[in-house]
Image 1 (cartoon, one colour):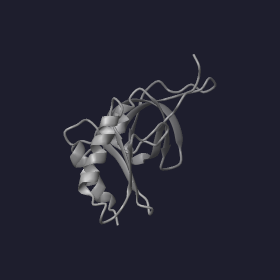
Image 2 (cartoon, rainbow, N blue to C red):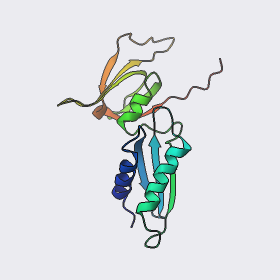
Image 3 (cartoon, rainbow, N blue to C red):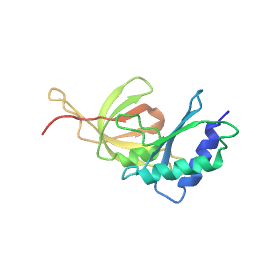
Image 4 (tube, one colour):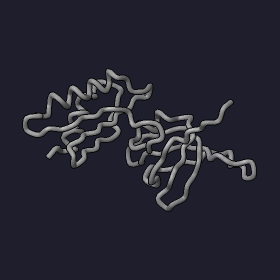
Length: 157
């Protein structure tokens, strides 16, 4: 059986000298391996090709056949790893907290975990015409967040 951890190690090794980072690896029962990578400036076909080749070199199709897909996470997908937050600074997010609260906010800063202090987001809540949001930023620990995704706005200017 194809091991997700093994794929993660291969991808991490292939990307260690680059600014591209691993977001997620999914391995289905039908032996479909999906690898999601990202970069602050977007993922190129070369980035996907590098990861694809690295996996192909390390896995033996003679031993176990598989289908391999390498791509960026895609628009509207949840944020899964900290480097994605740094990429989305300035964007509007919909954040679902562990307690069920949902908040729409602009991401102002993403602070990585430091000695004894966990990773945090600095956000500014988005208000409505009837209920304006407070001006002061809010600091949120990542451990309080169940999911977050970029809000896609299709308004025409």
